[in-house]
Image (cartoon, rainbow, N blue to C red; front, side, top):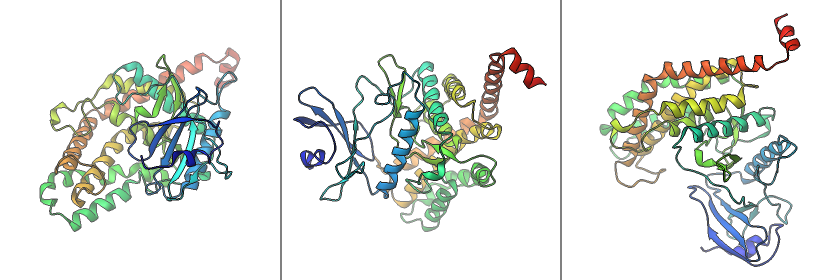
Length: 382
């Protein structure tokens, strides 16, 4: 593998002894390795942080520690902070990362045994559990000041920045591909103002900046052996954002009946039952802190995230496929067309989806009121 694992591991405060190292996981950014103890004691995960993507490793580490420490404070009395929240290992330098002689940055955490994750949501129960997981994650962090965190990837979900990049790619047309994309360009540009509205709401103070995960794929949830939520992982993109980002990002993949790069556009449909169950799970956890305006922003997130992904894929296609890995010359264009089709399907069902969000919110609010004591209900009426 090309790394001196023995020297690296010695720089962390772990149980020393013989170990085996094996590649672990399917992440596209960081390199992850399972450190297995030869004598059956504690196992660890070792990660090489991609400092080309995450340029401020110390700031990223401070983010992760602030979030995990806060999440541990929110555990119930019978909770286990070592299994329900990621726990990182301090280095001998007093920091929670180590830089080796080649300039690579490393961190270690405890390995969580008897957990599982899934790349695809296939059942309504999984969708519900996903909503609960990311909703609870936001709820537990809703009282942590976002100004204490850095942007680990500046402008990661800034639609205006992404559109500026698209316009530059159109203007430059480096590889003479613009002629193939007129329909996609016109579609995306026609929605610029509508898709910038969420960002505008934030700037006007209509929705608060909160701490969000910003990569709410279902495989960033660890489930226990009974398929119940145990832990939210992959915290490198946790930074200030709007709750609609996480809601929309999760649903972008959950409700799509086809692959992100599906060639046959007719295969792209919406799985409404999965949408409904994820929304139920999410709102069950966020009812206590979401503002009414944030509630209305959720549907905007469902529309925005496939739009953003379309913009990013098309920009990369026009620039010559310099960011995303591609399997064939038109791969990024095919991805763009698939995400555009998904957005069209969501637009067709927009009122239905928005109506379900609001009705579920009102349903949960009603149940909350019914569970209040008679005296408290009387006091509210008065």
